[in-house]
Image (cartoon, rainbow, N blue to C red; front, side, top):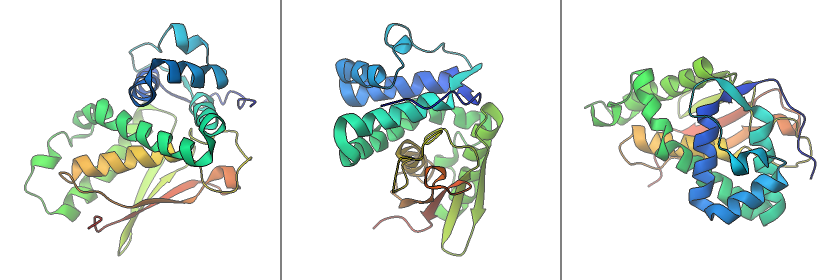
Length: 211
């Protein structure tokens, strides 16, 4: 595989560190190293990204990891691992950023489920918009929320697909919804993907949890 060209758009190094450690948790050290090799990210085998909020983890690095997962494990297996890695990324550490967005204790507050979602989803979008070059917006509709990534790292530089591929983002969203709702699971479907030629990556979140 040929990794995508560098984007010049970045996550904080800490986001990259969290993602790589989450992949290791899901796949083990040898599995992680194989993926990083295939993705052309050998520099992260010997040395993790720094544990700071400097913007230094290029969007193309996350895209290359997704491509490598698909190439090594097939589309279905790669998708499952990317979802698991996205969920682990949130549960391991990104929820600690909730304090920055003022939602650290939202799961404990006596709000209705829908109120928690109305507060939590825009707050998480704000974390990405403020700390990284990922611009994210949330729109509420009658039966769903629309989570839109205007510059998406998960599929940066890709056009080799026939289905949406931003499974790391989908897994992260699923786990953030579970946390903010106090343990409910929600359907998250990617309806638009830049890798398919769409202008944005869009995720539809059903308001009602999975029974």
